[in-house]
Length: 161
Length: 161
DNA sequence: TATTGTTATACTCTATAACTATA
DNA sequence: TATAGTTATAGAGTATAACAATA
Image (cartoon, rainbow over all chains, first blue to last red; front, top):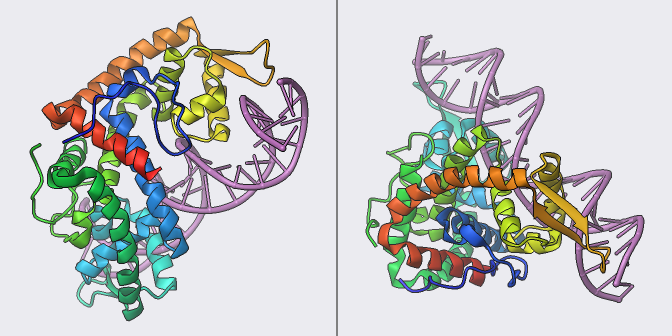
C-alpha cells in the first residue's frame, strides 16, 4: 500500500482544508480518518445519487432485496446493520415508488416478504451504473490492495460490533 | 495486508449479522464497507465515550483546539470538515462545560479565538486514554499496515472532496 | 414467551440561508 | 464586498419503547 507518512496537518477534504491546522494526536487515529473518508465517500455518492432521486441507504436495501428475493424486513435490517424500526419507513418509501412489492408469507403471517418490481429492477440497474462509477474512483485510489483493504474494513466492523 | 476474500455474505457487524443474506454487488463496494466499518467504530467509541459524557465529534474539536490555541471557529470547522454553523453549538456546549474559553481578537473583532481551560486540558487527557484504548483496538486489527491504511483513507478523503 | 412489523417519539448530526458585526 | 460567527430552520438517519398480530 502506498500513502501514509504525511505531515500531521489538515484534512484535505470536504471544504478546502485548513492546511495550517495541526491535528495533533488525531492524526494517528484510524477512527478519525475512517470518519473523514467515509464522510467524503458518502457525500460524493450522495451528490450523484441525489440527481437520480436516491438516498444512499436505499441503494444498499435495493441490492440486498434484489439478491435475496423474499427477504423479511428484520432480516434486511440485520444485513445492513439497521434496526427494524429504521427499515419500516425505508420500505414504505420504496413501495410508494413502486420499486418493491411485498406480501405476507402464507405459513407465517408475521413475515413480510420483499421483492423488486420490474420497475425496481430497471431502476436498480440504472443506479448501479452510478454506484460503480463512484466505487470505481475508490478502486482507483485503493488500487491493487482492494481485497486487503476491504478485508480490514470488514474486520473492523466484525470485531468492534 | 491480511483479510479479504470471504464469501459475499452478511455483515458481521452491529446486530448479530444476517449470515444467510447475500450482499451481492455490495460486497465489492469499498464505499459500503467504509460505511459499515465507520459505523461500528463510531458506535464503539460512543459507547465508552458516553460514560464520560462525551460525544465523539467533541473529542476531535478538543484535540484540534489543544494543538492550535487561538484557532477560530471557521478554521476549526475546516480542520474537522464541518460547516461553521455546525461548529457554533459545539463550541457553546464546550464553553458551558468550561472546557474551553474564547476571546475576541483585539485587531480583528470578528475573530473568536479558542483555548482550552485547565479543566479542558485535564478532561482531554482523561478522554484521550479512552480514545487511545479505542483506537488501540483498531490498531491491533489493522496491524503493521496502519500507516498505509491511514494513507489510503486520507487519499479517499482528499480525492473525493 | 418470542418474533415480525408498526408507530410514536426523540435525539444527533448536519447544512443552507439570512442575519449582525466587523473588515 | 468579504469574512467570522449566530440563529432559525429543516432534513436525514437513527434508535428505544410500547404495541398488535402471529407463532
